[in-house]
Image 1 (cartoon, one colour):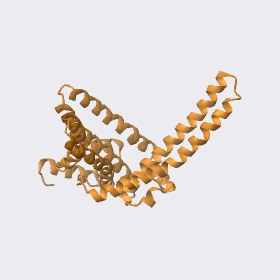
Image 2 (image 1 turned 120 degrees about the vertical axis):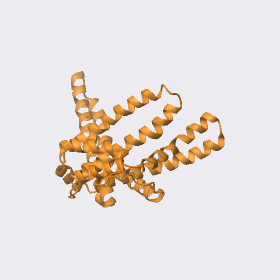
Image 3 (image 1 turned 90 degrees about the vertical axis):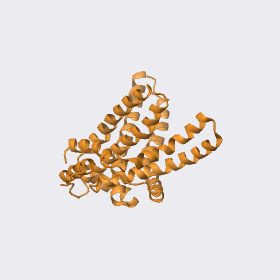
Image 4 (image 1 turned 30 degrees about the vertical axis):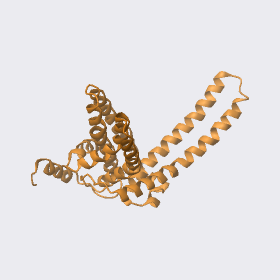
Amino acid sequence: MKFSKIISNSFKYPFSGKELIFSFLLFVLAIILPLGFLSDNNIVMILGLISLIIFIFILPGYMLSVVKNGTKESFKIPKVSLKKNFIDTLKLIVLDIVYSIIPVILFLILIPVGAVMSLSVNDLNSFLVQWGLILGIIVIVFFIFSILQFIATARLAHYDSLSKAVDFTQSYRDLRNIGVLKVLGVFLIIPILTSIIEFICFYLSMFVPYVGLLVYFCIIIPIVCLIRAFSLGLLYSDGSGDDFDFDKFEKEVQKIKYGKLY
């Protein structure tokens, strides 16, 4: 699967059907609380707080279902399922904790060790080299485990199994099967591209007070989140052992968009 295909189809995905409205409505939950503050309405603020809590515990699980669609070569945007999305969010929290254990332990060990060693260093250059080495090791380890967690998230979505997702060995094998450079491309380039879009849209939204920000948070941000999640799914379809038919994908997208039959 070409990297360019992953990018192009990821950017097409949010516009593949009318189900996009589900994503917009989900993000509306996040803006009710700010609207309550602006209107100084206690009832709206209480409803907004409840809505925000629901949003926080539903959004990660919902995006995981988007990742799953990518791994299963389905271009449909999923509907919100409160129970399923909530459970998936809890699984993602566990996954984050598991993949953070080793980097955090390393951090807690190296920082005190470095501080103790610094007491016996009198030369500034030696001090800088020592801390540069320590911080470099910490950053590299955190980055490596971030990549593994990235793949593990796709494994969780694809297999719907937390035990398979926390399998470090299998995550590493999937990373090698897909290709390290390709994974790094999706891990780094997709966020950069979507961040540029976010920045431009946010800048333009400032010219239309209130309405512009509403459009930004309820339309632009959901689209960006869908692009990022689906790109991970497409990436993982390359290493899951399933054949992804991109020609079929693009034809079905066109059918949804133009109402044509192929």
